[in-house]
Image 1 (tube, helix red, strand yellow):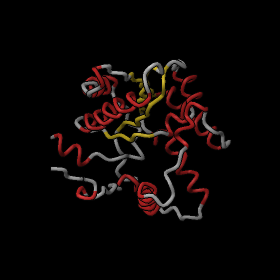
Image 2 (cartoon, helix red, strand yellow):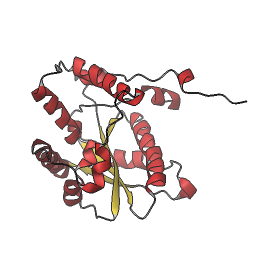
Image 3 (cartoon, one colour):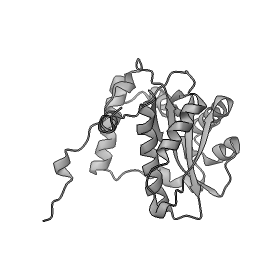
Image 4 (cartoon, helix red, strand yellow):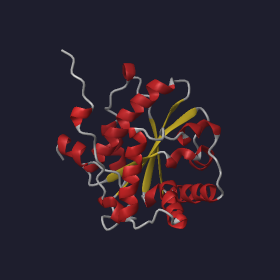
Length: 224
């Protein structure tokens, strides 16, 4: 797939088929993605690829936490910060939620269906595999997240060349205590992102959503 087309067509997939993704394929995607730029070539990223029984256990434990209304560990509390009410950022978040709930026929006041929808993220959207990206805690948070963002985008774009799709999600790393225990990730590693990866279920209504973008002239300032 040509790179511009990949950038334009990449989208978040919220339900995958159960078809397994070969380890060889994921390895190739990560090898390509690791060509991402990083500050002074530090390459701070490391990848924990989970599938099979390990991923099933993560799904189960995450959902149990959600249903028990448990807050995430302190190290992940930054994920709970909401966008300022009335801001353009909050409005964009609301708009995509409206699109998704409309397609999924989830009424605003149907708390049961909304709760079921919330759990999907903690189940990695039923993907056959997930990639947890970690980095050493000794590295600065700001620089690490910039570099990890680059490799994350590369993963999502490279996946398209293999007929695979993705969804970048915070929910997959929210309960860090669960992930550390089940996936054997030490406390010295910072959990930075999770990516669900697999073959999309195109019959799932929410997978038809194509999120909007701000008109480019609204966010460019020319000087000189």
